[in-house]
Image: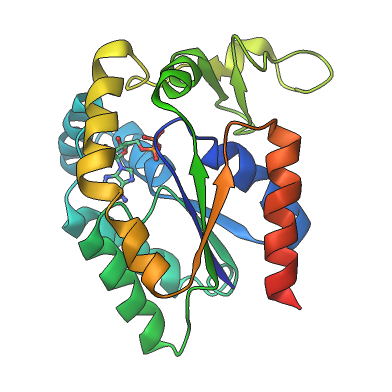
Length: 216
Ligand code: ADP
């Protein structure tokens, strides 16, 4: 099973993916997370990646392709994947089809989370990620507390690209490069559009219903 979670920055893809992973025994593949790992390792490639991320531009298709190929070779996870933040342009979408086809596999569905621009900015500016457990919180809408988070609050981090200047460019990049993919998947009857403005748990109920219907 290969699911794609689609939506603008701050739409809640990571939050929903984290919930789905447990219930459906899926493996989350977030190209954003993989890229941030590269940045942490401070390699030459990591430096190039950081410049792009902090500008709010896309990282090159070659770098992304190498990361994804590695993931698809990993037998521990390559049967049940939920992609978060990938593919990000038409070229990546077409390459993913080819990579899956080579192994006689297909994309199961594309879940698109729609959120208005004003809310996205607020969500991104309030986002906090736990560097220990990976859970995502929001200073304004979903603060971490003793009930919803086991780790110490010192592990909560703000991403370097979650600032007002970069978010504008990230949104413009999304509209110019990423949004056109929607039609590509709509034409293949793979697209499910979900209201990303609803409550986290309500969105989750809708999404899990869609996935459950595909599994049967
Ligand atoms: P968000 O969806 O909130 O923008 P991500 O963690 O998915 O956050 O991505 C952060 C940044 O990483 C993007 O702005 C972009 O620079 C880079 N990135 C992530 N995924 C891709 C991808 N598939 N192709 C190109 N660049 C990517």
